[in-house]
Amino acid sequence: MDGKKLEYKGEEALKEIERLTMKASEVQENLLKQILTHNRETEYLNKFMRGEKNITEFKSFVPVTTYERIFPYIQRIANGEDSSLITGHQITEMLCSSGTSGGEPKIMPSIAEDLERRTFVYNLIMPIMNQYVPDLDEGKAMYLFFVKAEMSTPCGLPARTVLTSYYKSKHFKCRTHDPWNDYTSPDQTILCNDSNQSMHCQLLAGLVHRRQVLRLGAVFASAFLRAISFLERNWRQLCEDIRSGKLSSFITDPSCRSCMSTVLSTPDPRLADEITRICSQNSWKGILCQLWPKAKYIEAVVTGSMAQYVPALKHYSDGKLPLVCTMYASSECYFGVNLKPLCDPGDVAFTLLPNMGYFEFLPLGHNGKLLMDFDEGDVPNDKLVDLVHVKLGCFYEPVVTTFAGLYRYRVGDVLQVVGFHNNAPQVRFICRRNVVISVDTEKTNEEDLHRSVTMAKKLLEPYDGLLVEYTSYPDTSSVPGHYVLYWEILYCGIKTEAENENAVMVDGSVLEECCIAVEEQLDYVYRRCRSHDKSVGPLEIRVVEPGTFDSLMDLFISQGASINQYKTPRCIKSKKALKLLNSKVTASFFSPRDPKWVPKMC
Image (cartoon, rainbow, N blue to C red; front, side, top):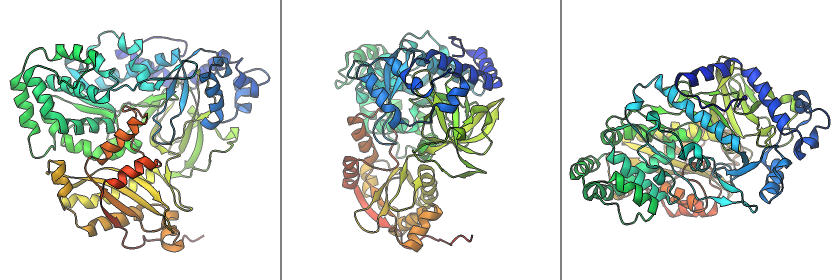
């Protein structure tokens, strides 16, 4: 890491952020020189760089690439060929992406030093938070972390998610005691491969330490809301464990039973009664603050597709707990941190750290307008922009070069530059480029879909309705095809799933108006296809039973997705997932009219 392998803490961490961002150009140039020096003899670089492997040659001859193009090299290494195909370092594992936002999971090469880079970023979080929230070392964090069972490549390399890699590493398991990161969950519960047993034990530990908990969280907002759903279904059993001082018999993992015997050292009927009283209320609005009264914030990813969970999180905290999104990371590379963690979720911006990887950017738009000019074909090398030369307000796709063997690799995210910290850009995550729904010539991206649904769901508010989850599907079984939205609606103040399922709280005409409200917010091309070309049929909303999206998550997890990294797909591609959703539909509504469309004058 810029020639250093230090764990920065406290004030030293903040000083290091200042140093890196002040010297962003210099740090980037030195890092690329190091990558080219270490990896100069690789088969991949030798394919494009015949002469001296310097920065000029690299930018002139090494092409911008995609996963499909680099995958044959990754596959060869996974099958047993030498790491020198793409890197001068030894590849120690393959990192699996979540696989739910863009289709099949990807596998990314990783080297030992990558863990040091990730740990470096993790060590920055609390020094940043301490500037805004005092005394976080005087209590515990109820952070719900999960691992996924590992796989192996044909040659025996571990293949696992980036979070599983970290939790199973010495950087996590052998960490020194840190009062700012004192978790309620014993490590053994985090490392349990059974997500239900892990969830039960972690929530149980969090409830036992409820009056010491200063902050709540999970990696993604969806995982935290899944924990709330688990608690709604299982609080009685959790209370019985606390009352009796004995762990539920369904917890069979030996490590969990061993560590939880310390957590449940004695029966505690009084605590069980307190939790029972809270959880027995008719409404769970604000329940997080009641169960964990000293909690100061909720930490989770709430950007991009996770932004839809903000209303639900605010509901369960009664709007009293700030939603904190601390960092921007992916399986390919960790990118940056949020230096203003208490900002509104809609204003989250990440300061890019120039020592994480060599960053270039593919322009996608300007003057606040997202154009998305480039498809997956060849991108001219001269189109890329260096880290320090991006422009305020413009949209870009990050392109990364890493020590582990990715060269000018398109990450697939869309970012907007919203500011600078010293000489490093601050970016807002907009969406994934390749997540779209389309039935004709229109192309709806994730940002547009989310914005449209956000506007439409406001029509439910007068009826005390809360849209807790949604996804979409391009139904082309008839001509013309049309968009289908699957909505799960919670009626606040109605406690049980059975009562929700049987309640008729919103008149059908309201949901029809929701359909047209979504369409009115979609882009010009969509509205033209609907209103003028008639190549897209009326949008449909299918209301599904409560708990449907938990079942959908269970399906994806059973097929190999990670509970940590799971994100509800914004567009359903799996036939099994679609079958599940359709089996849970309770009512269906269509747009009652065409959306407004006026031809643009040239």
